[in-house]
Image (cartoon, rainbow, N blue to C red; front, side, top):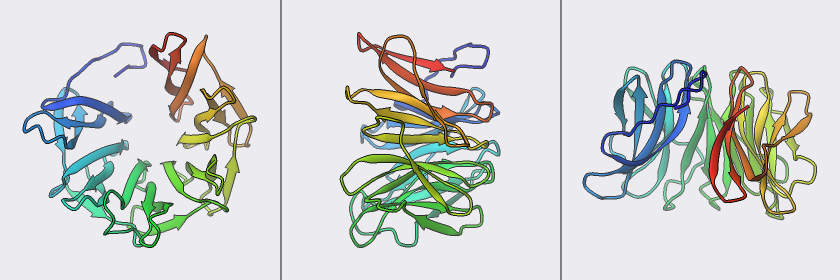
Length: 275
C-alpha cells in the first residue's frame, strides 16, 4: 500500500499465498484475495485489511471468493462460485452480513459462468457482467442499492463487461463487436451509451470512472503494446505515457484526479506509477 506521502507499506495476509490487492477506500481499508495456504486446495479467499487487522472475506458455502471492490462505507463486493462451479455476486456490509445475488437472466447451469461483480460506488450500487442462460454471452448489468437490476449492451456488442460505476451511476467498461474488436464505452445515468476508442486503437479497455465522469484505461497500438489514456467528461481523450515504457496499463482514477497503474520497461521489469 502506497500512501499519499509516498510511504510504502508491505504486508502479507495470514494463510494466503500471493495475495492480490484489488481496491482501497478513503479510510485506507484494503481488500483483495489470494490462494489458501493451509489445506492446499488451490481455492481463492478474500480479505479485508483494516489498519493492521485482517478479516477473512468468504461467502458462506462458497468454493472460491474473489473480492473486487470496497466503498467508503466499508461495503465489500465481489463474486464467488459454488460447489457446482457457478458464479454469483455478493455484497458484504461493514457489519459482516452478506447479501448474495444473481442477475435474473444469468445462467445457473453452465460451469464457470454466472454473475461477476467488478465495481461498487459510494451508494452501494454495483456493476459487472453476467453470462446469459441461452448462449452464455456476457452482458453488463447494474444492481442498485435496493436490489433492482438493469441489463445492457452497447449497440452491436458481442459481449459486454462493465468494470466501474460512479456515484451518479455512470458506468465504464468495454465490449467486443462482431469482428472481435474491443471498444470502450460510457453509460450515463439515463441509459445512453457512448462508445469510444483512442485514435489508432486496435483494442480499448475502460477500467475506472470517477465521480466527475473521467474514465481511464488502456489501448492496444499497432506495435501490439498497451498505452494508457484518460477520457474527460466532455469526451476528449489524452494518451498517457512515462519514460521509455514497453507497455503501460492504467488501472484506476480517484475523485481527486490521481491516476494509478503500472508500466513495463524495455527490460520487461514492472514498475508502479501515480500521476
